[in-house]
Image 1 (cartoon, helix red, strand yellow):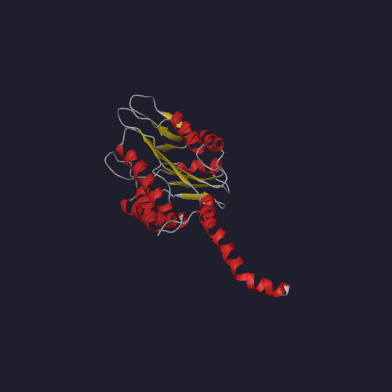
Image 2 (cartoon, helix red, strand yellow):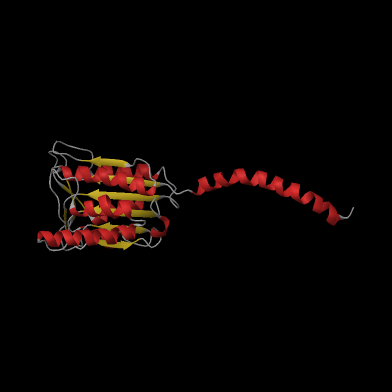
Length: 249
């Protein structure tokens, strides 16, 4: 028997044996490469319930659309709360330790009143603090997580774009650096931007960019109907993050 005929006879069994070993490994390999999405959502201003509602609802929708777990939600009320600058920093560090810093994606959602200086943080009788853009930038850098999405629903929230946005960090804000946003009512479930972006656009869009463009149009139409000066929502950075995020059907 020639070597060629021997290999011809053994070829089929060898291929079948190879497949038997290879196939069980495929799901394990895919599981190893699966990206984890972690959501941290804080409603920072306790005197109005809309921020508690928005932080909670936004976390649920993002996790549902992009496959994250239940997420970490903190909020303040008129009597107190745990959504402080210190707990935000601690939460980001704690969640980052559970993540693969190179492949996983961290979503940070912040909703509050804003000013050109940053975001208002108030819980019960505690004195109001301001979360400054530079402070948040430092918190995010210390996580060691490469791919991040930061969504800020607040007046003047565009001030956070220069220190945060880069190729690995996508930043979406309810307004530019020079304008207020609207809808901060105590008993409302969403702000104008939160409703348009999370509650409407993100439920039906396949990508974050698609959701943003849809929400920006919805917000503008609503503001003009109400006679408000447009808030000009912004989206910047994230060239390396956007391709990694495709919403579930």
